[in-house]
Image (cartoon, rainbow over all chains, first blue to last red; front, top):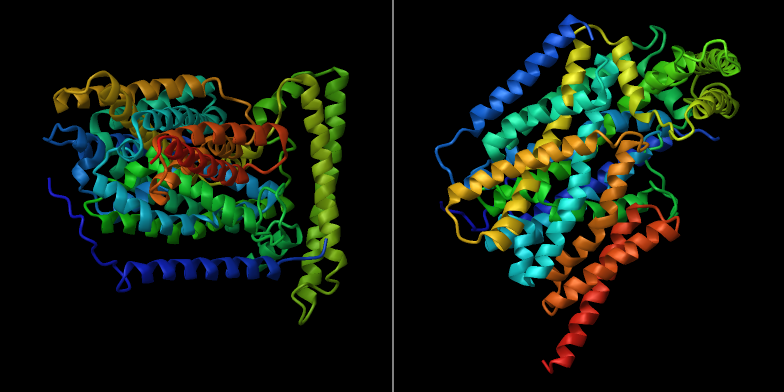
Length: 45
Length: 572
């Protein structure tokens, strides 16, 4: 059984660091969209 | 369930067992083949398996019910997950791969000592043993309600189906069936959401449904306020949720084993990144489905008690004063619902007649009236629940997990009910099979092979691993038979997890991030951290999501202090 322990490139972006930053950016965008969604349907109680 | 629903469900169960046995067949009889698929899995299969393992039947029936009762704020629980995935992909995955371990706890012996490995693996067995019982109990609630079986019989059937493919096929069978099951969960969710939309009255548009859900306070996906006692807000989700996800995906063998099947570090990383990107949208969609169920019941009277088995207990008291009071409560509930429906319709009329303002002609009073009407319905419902408590004082009634099922079985067309039930089964079996697989792995690798029989042929360990899987399956069935009445299952599972997760995470943080930490430091830190978490849960009102943070920080602090003191004492 051979196991490839080489640091291969990620499927998108050229380095893992860039991919991680993209994922964290994606999270920020999602939270902003969810917040906008909440505010769009928020009514005074 | 009608005949076509039965056909769909039975065909699905047969397909899963057959497919699991087919994919699990192999000529290799090595323990790494049985437990790690010889590290040959593609990243997308591991990614779907990771999602399927986390998405239990509780996710389906509990989360939709929670959205109905409490709105979408539970979404924030998952905000820390993508951050945790990035940290695990960057730091944990390369170390596990390079250490060539089968279990996460095996790594701790390489880094610290045997007692730390033993302690963490036993904690995992206790914690996951409780979790698998709950994961089995949830679908038992489904079947016992729909098929009229007892919960015990349902549990036995469920456990038997999972054992049928997980024992002979090992992790190959578990992972490939997870892929199929996750696909069915996606299909089931889309079908449930679309059917809920289609069942709305013809004059109520999707926009109207969102408007009513928002006016009822159900689209509360993000809460920016900071409050340690508030279970779900942005901060508890980001920090508490991140620590919980770090502990679950980084140290819990039921997840670690999923991505250790990867042929390379890159494949394992990709599977985690896939989960990071897909999890939040999936949870949003599940919660949104629950809110659409809530909107549907604005126009159709929901049952006062969603758990029909409990409602029957009062209805059986015919002729007694209690039955009379129950009828009065039901009438009050009916009137409250009628009034709420009128308010909702009036609100929509205002919305349609207004121009320019998305909030309607009178934006301030309409939603307030609807919220008051919702409260009146809930108050009337609580009267019914109070009467139920008089019949059965020992039963803490909570019907959150029955809401979605009640909706599906009473309103969905023939065939679609079977599909949704099959999806719930898929969600349950995908979690249970992975959990049994990992429980057996830890039992064999961390206990049996490490402490009982260190030198034996692989075929022997494979045989023991198969027996271990079967044993944990039987144990889960016995546990699930006695677990009923734990309140909302989803919170019970997460609460139990949080009692242990933080401390174990602290040990791994010491292992990965503090080269000066010693085995004694990690072990004593683990014990003190566990005491701190239990004391926090018993003596304070701090929300359970923060237990992970507290446990982890205490273990790291105490672990480093003990390590430093030990080195000073030995003069090193």
